[in-house]
Length: 98
Image (cartoon, rainbow, N blue to C red; front, side):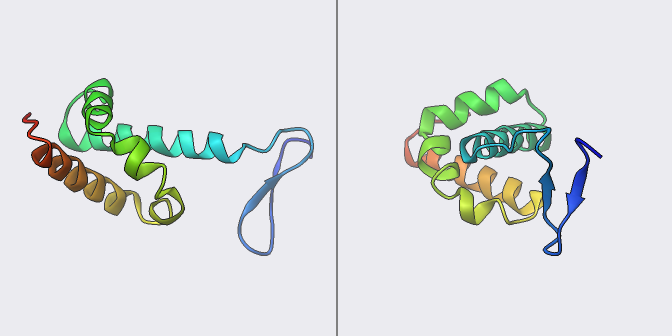
């Protein structure tokens, strides 16, 4: 069964020694990427545009990454809505218009 996921009693998945475990940084980067993609899909624009908007107001470094432990436990729908609301609020606060 090398490489197969094994379901533990806590319903989390562990991988056997055939595959490396992702680091915390890799999990966070993957989450940030999925947030960017979800927001772009919801807004009907390119992910690169969403990334630049987030970067301009510091949303990734000052909100998504520091709050990862809390927000990654929410549903994708709630996370996406929250990030869009926060992005638009921070843009307005900084006088940036879209």
